[in-house]
Picture 1 (spheres, rainbow, N blue to C red):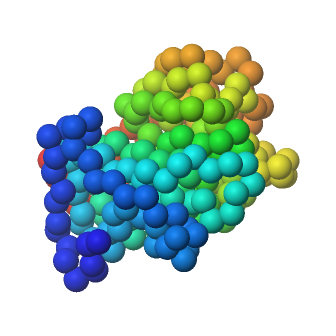
Picture 2: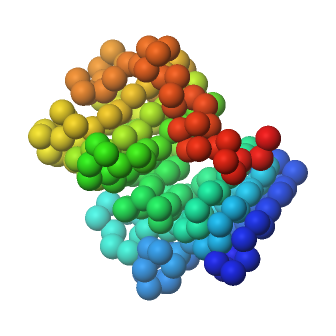
Length: 226
């Protein structure tokens, strides 16, 4: 755990395939999803390079309660993960700066890689995945609309066949189809086919994708390493 009083900490490994921090708490064992993280960072300006974060709790059975098992909880502002891996069965990467958990990694049939929450189009938030690889077991969505203005983009991402053909889920609320922003750009792999994607999914062109492909989206010039 990196406390709020210790900013500017870096965790660095040799590569995400050979260096890892792992534990196996769940929401049930830790008395809450927030506390189940194998690594929990509350400080600002945290950097991780070439390392994996793992929660080794087993894949939960359908309907299981208290099975959320966070690998990395990031609560501080301005964090950078470069060449890192995130592994877990449910709520793998938990970003406190969003209103809700950000599940990632292996999930069951009802799971999603992201559950971004944005309650207004005026909120300058969103999740952007660039040059990523998605793998695992089961069948999952790229995102589910936890709030009506949820915004998630995948670009230059390799997707295995665990991605459901429709790709995304509006949280069973069709009224959100007009306000959510789910985009894909130059992705590859068997899970990247857009032929059967949900009708509200946007196939981004070069102009639409540009704003999400550089660090200006997160004001990176103000704090990211160069």
